[in-house]
Length: 257
Image (cartoon, rainbow, N blue to C red; front, side, top):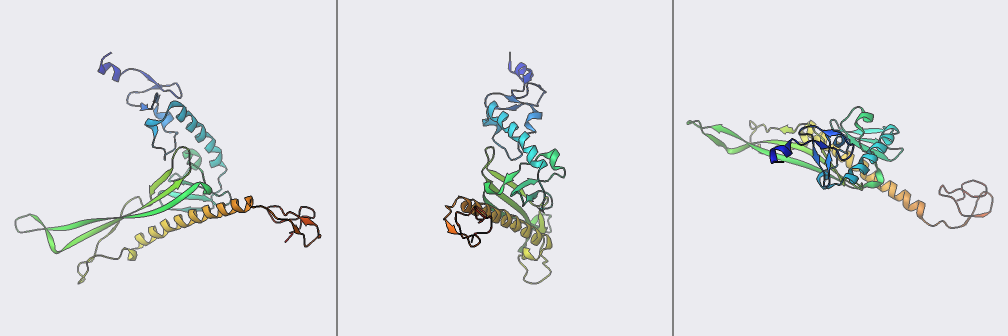
């Protein structure tokens, strides 16, 4: 079969067994993946081409189990406008999604304890404002004038078998700040005086604070739970007891300390 024939050769999805339509194939290391199966993978997964069929099947199984976690998710706080960090403080979990229907979108539910780091990156882009000379050529002002645009990126590093980074922009469109050159000596505006810039910066720092603080609290709880418990004399019943993880006497149930 020639090259032209191979292009139109019928392909079968190695995961679900369905026929793959023209231009719908997603190559795997040892097989093919249809568009429908690919759409069920985590949006933060980016290593498909180096994944085996078994790798993809395992991830799809994880994604189906994730639906139960989404159904049990109790939203206590939301950070963001477009792409949002949705938090369940009681269960110590969060999701990152722009979807309104969580059950339909099935965003990955991640434990606070699996967060390994959070970074805020504010990207500044500078564009020079030009003018035309008498011959119609674009030339710089003297001194040069610039427009500024800002994007707010969040990078969350996590322990997950299918991805280790959740990276997204908080703003759907750049925050543009144009200096008022009618004011003498104006060169570059302070972006913190812009309402949108200030709000996105606060939003980004809130996300970093919440996830970082939550991660530390979970780790402290785990350390406390694993710490060796020392026998003490209960102040209520006088028995020598090893308090449980809540500090209660094993004999009378009162707070031993």
